[in-house]
Image (cartoon, helix red, strand yellow):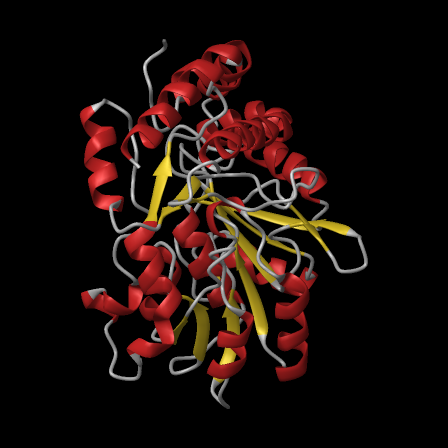
Length: 375
């Protein structure tokens, strides 16, 4: 059996080695290391793939979120609603901009932001909602966009874990996640479904005026060299990373389907145990691209399972062990513990198993045998 890894980037690279190497060599030959032709080519390719009018590449996914909020003109004290159960970057940028984070609970079945919790959190100071398409599953954008329209709120999609996923509207139409709200942000961290070989990110929008603002912000507020029209940052996707992403983008749908196939195989085996809750999903759909395969262990022995798997050399992880509202940096007297019932439960039950494009049947069987043996 091949060595088990949480993410097998080496095997993935071997299959596209010639294209990746050619892109990197092109950058080295032309010495266009920053904002070179490959950055613009990748931008155009991604716009076409997503069906988005504007893609603005940047240095990483966290910057993408921050720049999106800067471009919308949010002011210190404005309230921004987001999920309590996610990675800290989502709330981090809200705090950095001196906005007021409003953390809310999530749904138990999807682990995405709770629609009822959003409704209950809205105040006159609320200016934006940041849904996170967690673990690769699209959030309920029909309901979120309806709430935003009713209360005149911005929607900023945190699409760091779900690039390539389609959202299916209530009328059956499909749209790529990240292109639905006012603006979307994604990460190209190496382990992502579309990952580069370092840091990278991008912002998506269909708003021409907002796109113009964002393009200035990522480049020190400049549209003309040494003319600083807006307050900006230095956040550019370098050409080598753009070259890697350009080589990988044509394979993204294939990668996402491989993840769905692996997840289905996990589900078919693990669903037999009553102490394991597997992801529930329409396997004929494409609203979930399984950035992570996360199960729930409901008998109180999640941490013991983690130790068991690690002893057997099986990579695994807990996303996320501590809710954001309990993190030292984001503790706030405004929060009522009773409002985070689901998040607190998930933090005690979730465990992520290896998930990547190169998983084979032998590996999945070995992993699931070890899980069932313990549970």
